[in-house]
Amino acid sequence: MIQIAPSLLSADFLNLNQDLQKIEKSADWLHLDIMDGCFVPNISYGVSIVKAVREATSLPLDAHLMIVKPDRYLEQFARAGVNLITVHVETCDHLHRTLMRIKELGCKAGVALNPHIDPGFLKFLIKDLDLVLAMSVNPGFGGQSFIASTVEKIKQIKQIINESASAARPVIAVDGGINLENIAEVAAAGAEHFVAGSAVFKSEDPAGAVAELRRKAMFKKYHDYI
Image (cartoon, rainbow, N blue to C red; front, side, top):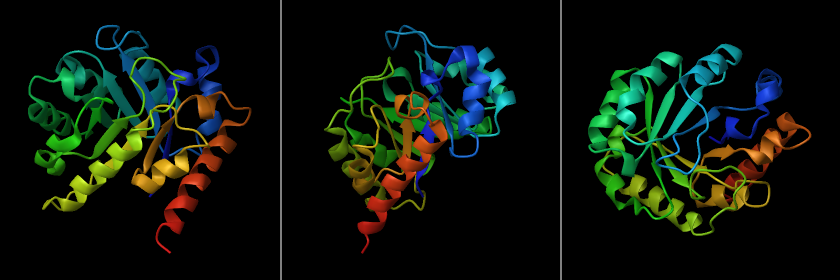
């Protein structure tokens, strides 16, 4: 199933509620980029904004924690109302323990792979994951260009999932530089969940942009099976 997740980072924070209403009925998820200025070279927003967003939208929320030692804040984000918490491999001393804690808090668990991270270790965690997020840019800023090698990484992730003995099938997601020009190729590689910031919120018609991204991704998926 194709899922489009607009990234709040690209929204107009002076008119946040209006921007959320524009994509409320067209998007599948809302992606929340939580940056601490340490793990990534930028600071975005925190729990208070997440709480406000939770009150403003019925969309499921993915808190993408680009922060050091995320275990310290898992409970706060879960209480703020997020549905999925995604952490980076490099930020967790004991990744399996972190994933188990996320699930204990009643959230789905995701792991994000930066461009330099080999996905091979995933075969030991497949049954514990709800989502694998392939970063197609170096995290920290919106509006970056898509890193082409991510397509091959997504294929590798899909293969690892297919070869796993686990019945669990985590969703393959991609984040960074997704637009109308590249989403079809990324979908063909195996991605199903697409984070899109500028391509949605910087367009004149955000709802229409979501619909067109979905159409492009679904068209390629369909033609891969006929």
